Image (tube, rainbow, N blue to C red):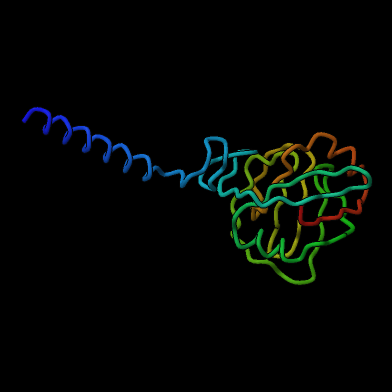
Length: 164
């Protein structure tokens, strides 16, 4: 009788362990893989693994797009080569002729490489860190912005955005 009880306990423990492992909340992602619910990169939420290539002259950067309707609408416009206008010594911007969906929030800490939408049609690429009270819709960020300010220069810049 003791052997039967021991087997029953082992089966119950095994079943419980199997169910617990298959019910974890990371949906099979590896510990280093972003499932879209974590804060990554520059501290913004709702990241996805959607990447985009940004080319400025001979410099090439990789950007991570957020998983939101605004970023999806932006990505649908790619590839895109635009002349971005200098503003305030910290950003380049471009006015789209038609709007994109928005979900603006107060900017707070802007980081080098942040890609945002101001209003519903102004694409903004920041190349300096600063704090702001303006509201932006977050589109994504450049994952390694080293050299971004140099590549963009002090005046207007031609920037190519394309799927990675």
